[in-house]
Length: 198
Image (tube, rainbow, N blue to C red; front, side, top):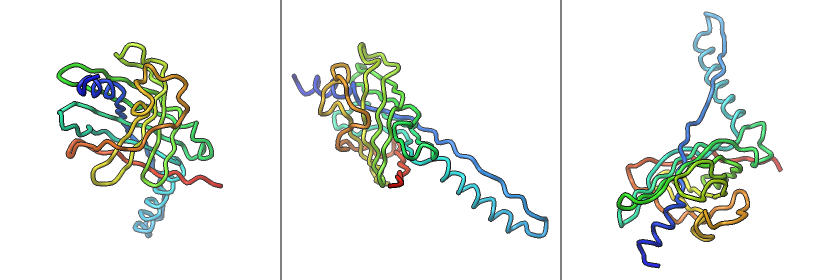
């Protein structure tokens, strides 16, 4: 298999996740004489509400760097609600990816079925629900992201187990080391760390 074909095959599994975090605020009503105190209480309640609502998350969108010029995009919108803190398999959301080389390539979208985060590293998995890659629907894939704050990194299950179409029975929340780098200026990923109660 030549380098171009191998690169395209790996890219067909490249993972793109678009995320849009949903947060809410709780208001604090105060007396007219304590306006500043009320504002402070409101901000505190809002931050507390966000912490209580979400136990972990992986969001963001970016392109990967490839010296050959491949167009590879990942997008994540994965969340674990605070009420499900003890069960990462209850994570929800979607992620998407696409990989094109000279106009040829494919894209796919998956529904999240597991999300584990530790510090600034996240592993997310999901089952492909839509794709223009024949045979990809119904297959599980996993992605690992390292949110470095500078140039994020990413890895995907098919780097070690082969094309997603050919992969059978991949366990949930299995990815690979984040060996790819995000292309500067194309976006980044954000990881909300999980704090399990052991």
